[in-house]
Length: 486
Image 1 (cartoon, rainbow, N blue to C red):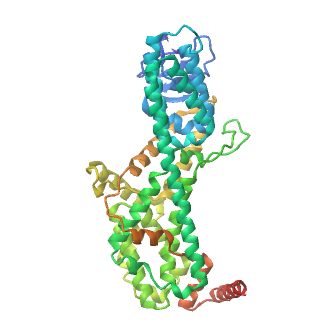
Image 2 (image 1 turned 30 degrees about the vertical axis):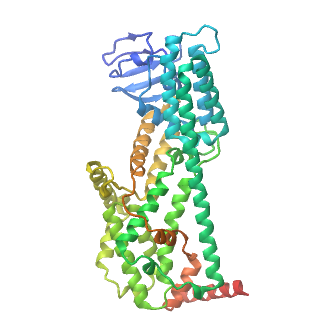
Image 3 (image 1 turned 120 degrees about the vertical axis):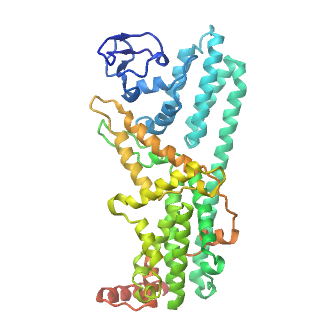
């Protein structure tokens, strides 16, 4: 059981306690160690009542509930999120289960039933929070085994816990089943997109439809893009942000393991951004007539503006990226027919200068708007520019994985990462209020998109190459195309 002693309080006085961690006055500054006779490096360190650092062992002890103590939920989330940088989830759960067995003497014939009932309720709550928030951890068979073993052991020792144990496992199985179905849908969508691309190569003349034929109204397309964005966001687990940055290192201050990375849904979302950018460029470059290309550019500018109004910054940036791709950007005659006012306003909003200051201000305004909006309202939607969010989280992960000088985990960085990921959880748990347009959604997800070389070739055939470099590039691309068609 975790016992603490603080070396001094804020006045420099010695405070000695044999109570559990829940009894500590969290307003004190100081160093809390496991036992008066133990090394001070095995400790949790608080400043102004906030946990700032500690050993991995002490943090694990702090996570385990007792009959009278339950850890703060923000601590649970922060530790379960970032501890995987130092210990694999299945190892962490094993440690917790073993502590539980020792603490409650579950292997003994003499069990304090009153204490066990209170402890069991708290422990089941901890398991419930873990399975609900970090369900992907339990795709690991070792995690499921630990979960089943400990819930069975507790239920056998105290039959009143059996119902809670069953609800936790059933809820987890439902959640994992939903995630598995979503991943199957992603596979089928990718297969359909691949098949349409093969069909286009076999018979280019059969593909005469463009996005404006399918969805002529820009605001409707922005709404359908928002459907896709929220569906993809919803299925990203918070742990994926940490898993994606786990690295192998021999340095004792960094994580030393390389476990299976469960980041499929995060990667699928990044792929969606790239697909949308290339789809925009494809739609513009595939048209021979200049007026059609100009019309499509203006259409996508209007869609981007509608995305901005909705709060869908990820689709906005993907569209702007597509319009700024070299094969589209070089079409000077086409751009000469486009009203640039709206485009320049959007470019200013997504300007990368000073680490995207303008965008960050717009995001903050969107978050404030969402806070005051009612459930189900359009104003609830906040979809961040995902690549920038991942970049921000990467730097926080770097801080989390680096221990402080005395070898403690830097829990201040854990708190910072948890705060940002908690914001993400709020954004992703919003229902899309717009009606679904099946045909438009299908087109967005499966319409053929050109490769970068194909885009350049189409661009040169729409507007002739001007510089010597462009002429050389065009010549090279044509030769490659002829080789492929032989």
